Image (cartoon, rainbow, N blue to C red; front, side, top):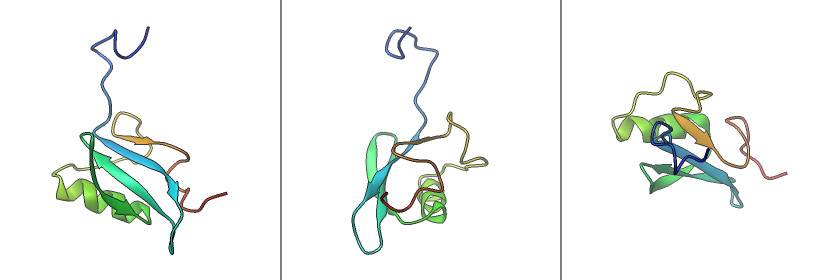
Length: 78
């Protein structure tokens, strides 16, 4: 069953996209489907969440944060 078919499966409010080239490398952060900025660390993700009124207790919880192209420890391109 796909997510679009099952309304009980919800997307997390926070999505962190793959590492982008830059000095330093960064990841784009989306909250509720809107780009809110770039992050160069887990702290930046937490700050973006807090600015949106979201308290994150566990960055590894897939119901809270969706990590695309690597997890919370991936901040450089391989």
